[in-house]
Length: 155
Length: 262
Image 1 (tube, rainbow over the protein chains, first blue to last red):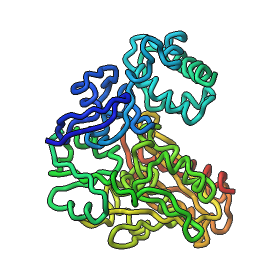
Image 2: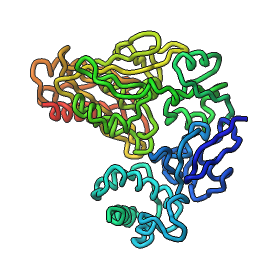
Image 3: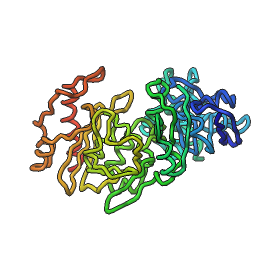
Image 4: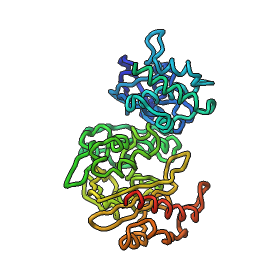
């Protein structure tokens, strides 16, 4: 059986996988990091977004073996102990979630946007969220949260 | 998903050697992995091109651009070189799927798959690009063969696409609001070799709107093609739109593209 070795949230991890094991299965089932969610399993909803080598990807559409040697960051890698990452805090403060299922993907996606556009306008945030589906909020407060999180990260 | 053997070669020669039997190449995997999940394909092994450094990158060449097969849509969309030389191509790449798909999906994967609603085929055909494989060079006009079919032979690997620089070019698409695939996309290019208009999403594969090209050769303006009708016969008809609707959209998108080029 192949082995997948990578760095997840700064920690070297390794495990036996089947070739067909998805990265999200590896993260959730092997590593027990269940913050990354599987919503649709068809690469559309974005609940499974993680960063691979600094870029946001859908971990349900990537094989674990394809992430061999990569640096992976999941939602669990953002907070510093009990202190939420500014983007997480902004989601809480702005009511950027209701049921919370899509939130890990939203936050990981938002952080990739902020890497590219540190001060995104509303239109840029909405366009960026093309690949993240939320069925509760109507997006209004998610957009607000991302803009507030981006602002907090700049200061 | 059925299981398979997985190989990640670091050279093109190694990759070619692995391509025997029911092996399949995987580039970004944005179409292939969902296809495997649905068990619509059952390859015995996957040969991942992701470890071959020479397949990545954007180089200026002969006034135009050569883009490595494993270059992602996001890299094309953000490339200063592409924005300078063929800005319409950067716009096309920025409109594919969503940001996460653009971070993984590649130009080589997209054209090898030749989805009838993919964006790149229109760009390659309109710009008169050349597909470079590990065996030969294929003009875009000869590369795309209809629905999910290309001129690629078994075991042939796309290594790059070479684009000449157009004088002006623009791509306009009407995206399906859910998938962002083109309901209809029209790429118009004014090049040294004349005016080329390529249409994706409307038919079973990319095609050139030759009547529009002729009309534009005499008068490069949106008005010149306003009355050029695209026959609905043979165009795609599905839950998203009828063939007649798509035929109409071709004209609308073409006029918008011409206006953007003028």
